[in-house]
Amino acid sequence: MDEIIPSACPHDCPDACSFLVRKAEGSKNRITIESGKVIPFQEGWICLKGKRWERRYRTQNRLKRPLKKNGNGWVEISWDDAWTIWANHLMEATEKYGPQANLFYQSAGSQYFSKRLGREIFSALGGYSEPAGSLCGAAGGAGLKKAFGHIPVYAPEKLYQVKGILLWGRNVFDTHPHLVPLLTGLKNRSKAFAAIEIRTTRTTEAAERWWRIKPGTDAILALLLCKNIVESGDAASGWMEHSEKGEQFIKLLAELDSKALLDETGLSQSDLSDLCRWILEHRPLAIYGGYGIQRYYNGSFTFHTLASLALLLGSFKIPGTGVVFGKDEMRFFPEDILKPTALKRKVPVADWHLRASTLSSPIKTALFTCSNPAKQGPETDRFPRAMESMDFSVCIDLEMTETAALCDLVLPAACFLEEGPDWRGSWWHTYLLRSEKALDPPGQALPEPVIMTGLADKLGLGIDLENMRTKMDRILLESPETEALGEGVFRTKESHGWTKDAGPIKLPEVLHPERSRNDWRGLRFITVHTAEYINGQNWGVNEDLLNAVFVSPLEGNRRGLREGDRVRVRKKDVVIHAVLRFDKAMDSGYCVMVQGGKGTNMLTTAGTSPGYGTPFHESFVVLEAEPESDENA
Image 1 (cartoon, helix red, strand yellow):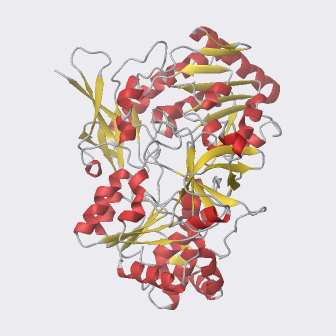
Image 2: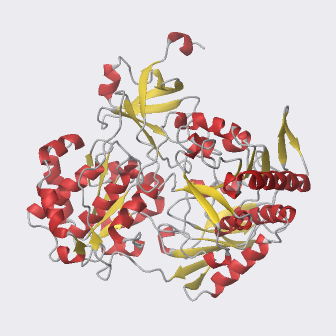
Image 3: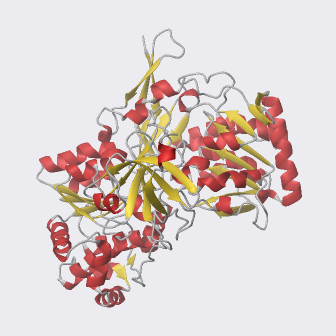
């Protein structure tokens, strides 16, 4: 009889799906992955990104032995040698430069709680450096914190209370697939959803209405909506009592030059009136804020302004009204099992690699885990230089990624199917998921807690992360904040933030969002997510030989280019080759490419926005025809 093992998708995705791993009778390695049935929003299916793990866990690209770089490439070494070499470099850097010379770089490659345990090793050395912010939602979260003092939780169950959903820069059909049936259900109940976007997407095609605006003007549009709603007398009664500095906010709105700001958005006065009317007619309204709209220097301000708009629409009194963005998926990780760190230095995630060697205590060793910054971060053409400035670097991963290839030591990790028990949360729903081990890892690959415990032994620290994982599991199983529902799914007692009991919203005191810094009149370069893979990590997906770059027909005609032409997308001396595609719904002044194409992030510009956000969209490129010699190459 087949064995059924509870598990969960590890991806950095809002859906955070429950898995049931079916292990064939008599087989050690043959599995199928099915959807769990407990979480109501999952509706018994999983997307292709999750289903792909049926093949990926045994791909020929899996790392199976520790690898050390030498002058001729890579040589296999034993685990004992790997731990010894790594420990020696850590101790040398700590003694010579201090513990902050060691960088612990961990991102969202896996959302499992056990990945947080590795910090214990570096804390025991006296401290470390780690990235501040994120490549994803830090700026938007910072904006909501300015309004509330924290990021309020919008539980998806509240969406059943709304009359409308406004998908503001959120292409959920590609990036949040388990929301789609809920949207369909809205239509069936004579409710509606609309979208604000910069281009055509599957979401705009399905929406009742959508409005196109220019990139980076989301905060301006939100301000104009606030101004219209206040001045028309349509704001929810009592909103000022639930705000700080409401009178000042009214005065600031009155001083805005509506016409000049509207021109910046690309909307007409008729468009603005139409949008405002739709919003007011569909209260209670949930504003689904996208991650792309906070990838500008004004990203934090955008979400602060969206919170203000939600206040005017009655978020304090009308159930379902609020801003849906994200929440802390690590909220239930038991932090108390980790010791406090004496010296922890934060370096901006978006541009640390530009300053790694010039910090007061330069970065001399680095560990990269659950991350691939050599591909995912901005301005990746400068990443190798940062790696060269270090004395030693280590990558723990499943495959030889772009980052791993630049490191001195690469260690093979078990995937989520090959270790456990473990847990993960969600930055959308309010369930916790528990996963159990289903398979043995290939070759000499080890679970990350085992890898880090081996390092701790060589450092003489006496730390066992597998024991810590067991303790974490026991704490969560016995927690009064969780309720077991079956299939490894636990309901949590997570407070909901958009309620009448929420504290007053602190309104913006300055209404001048920072504008873009386009110094050389190029096209704004926008990179977007796809349904095919997660966060630009396109494992197992067939890449076209050439990327596609999307522009308006007007921008193509200005350059004498036609649909299907081979073109160059260039930032100074960095060039990638692409095929030109026209999107008739796009405005002029920008181009769009999908994340994950070869070299795409070489064209993005590193910088840090308020809240330690990563303003990927503050990048500008030149679009030009492919020279004939290159075409024939």
